[in-house]
Image (tube, rainbow, N blue to C red; front, side, top):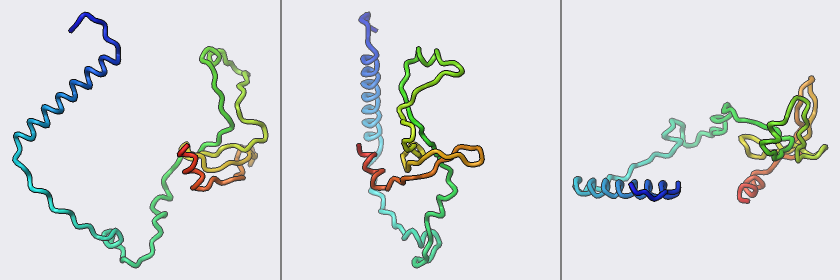
Length: 146
């Protein structure tokens, strides 16, 4: 090992170089030790409906397969950025200002993806949300591409 100080980037590069040379040695050893193999025959696939035991003309609603999968639904009132020193000063009764405006629609997210907007309501002494705008699939895809 040399006496020159190394930066974390140097260590990472050295480790990457070591892995690359080890992988090259392994590949060369494997290629020399094994005779040339004949290509495997291509698998023959049956249509999915026949493979699943369903007659080909049966109408089966595939959405039924996923209806019981749980997802995380979140209603977002707003966000803010706060310095750690200010975060540590928060106490009971502190008020944190969010970027959402009063009366502005709240975002409804499913697994972190915006699917709708709505307004806060109270139902049986619990908060709820009345959906006012559903995001279309094409809008969701367009927002993902941004």
